[in-house]
Amino acid sequence: MASNTQTTDAAHGAAESAGMPQLDFSTFGNQIFWLVVTLVVIYFVLSKIALPRIEGILQARQTRITNYLTTAEEMKLKAVEAEAAYNQALADARTEANKIVAEARAEIQAEVDAAAAKADAEIAAKAAESEAAIAEIRAGAVDSVKAVAKDAAKEILGTLGHSADAKTVTAAVTARMKG
Image (cartoon, rainbow, N blue to C red; front, side):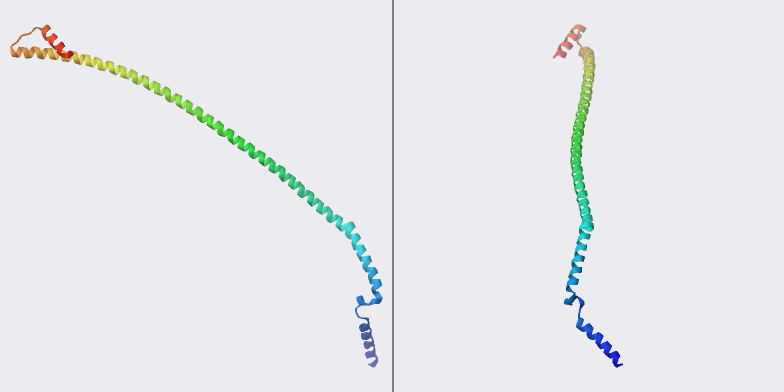
């Protein structure tokens, strides 16, 4: 048992005297060599493989973004042109609509004027007919009044005991009718 304890103590003492291997000054040269080799390998791997791929991806992304921006600008110009064409078409349509409305108004006004002229002519014709009828009625009424007046005058004179000839009674009634 004593030998076992000595061995364990020796191993423990060796581990304590050695410390951390990274801090052992006797291995610094070797550690620095492998550090430089590892960094050079990492540099070459990054510069020859990883970084060119990343750069390619970034360039492709930048190219895509530039293309999208160019396409967007072209689309924006097309949209502006389409809007201008739409506004022009709308203005043309409004002008055409106003023209159609003006033509319709002119046609309606012409129809109204023609109908009014026709109605005026019909009214004038009816008025002339009515005036002729009134004149006939008036003439007939005057003749009837004269006849009644003559008969009444003869009867009155006869009742009063006077006698008058038909010419005198007609002349008196005519004179009185004129005013």
